Image (cartoon, rainbow over all chains, first blue to last red; front, side, top):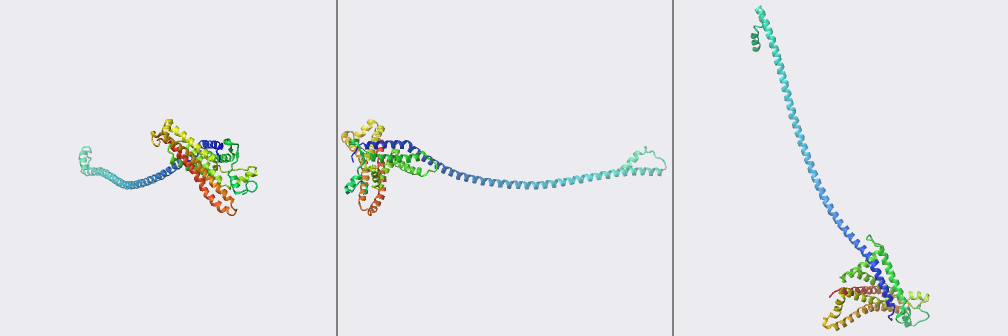
Length: 156
Length: 257
């Protein structure tokens, strides 16, 4: 029951224990706990961020899908329009070509007709001259009557 | 009633159990059992917590680290509740007091005859295993706390500030002698109440275990079991009270009036 030097001994032990705890026990444990706290907080925050980002990404994807659909529809419409245009254009072109060829054929025919007519004319003129010379039984000065004959040919 | 040699009367048995293993004479004698168990339990505390602290990781903690962290967090919470300054000493000090005192008190739950009987086999005839049933232990803590209170009072408030607090409160500087007297009473009461509360509780608890041990063997479990269960609460509570009051006293030392 008496107070004696045990008191001093226990005080020394106590002082050593406090010193030890203060330097080697408390700081690492507290640091580990604080680090973990920070990590958990960061983890929770990043999880929340992730959810948010996922939502954003989903919205963006939906937007992109909508845009793509719209674009596709536009492209299809454009293509259809273009196809119709092309058909129209080729129709017009074909018609024009046909007409052109018709014209050319007609012109050629006319040319041929004219040429034939010319040929006929000269031949008729020759025949006429021959006939006339036979009729007159004398030689007609072709040169003197050339004017006359030309008039006759143009009248045919 | 197996401890000691030969037949004993009840009072001899009790006195035997409460006699420390003492060496030397007068003030310079020491209680070897108190120092041994106090030091041993302190070493156990230091070793356990150092093991946890040295391998401390912010990843998933192991069971030992978990256990130590629970205590550290609990003590840290208590300190943050009552102590508002910044002092890196307070929390480790509180943890040391809580765990060390708890371990002291825990020795109370070891059957009263077990360790003394073992010791008597080795020729040691007196052994008191609960350090907190030794006034030297409890006063060692409370006087250390008082020293710290004075140290921080003077450090935080300065010499004149501390003198002003001693002489000027609570009645104003004109009633300096009365203030001083009150302060002396207060500062005496702090360590004495702190030490005696712990000592008294543990001493009484131990005494009751010893008394139960005097009863017939078939009664003993009926009484010692409930008392031991109740004592789990008491030892924790006493350790907690010692720690909390230490924090409060030191927090008062840091407060500037």
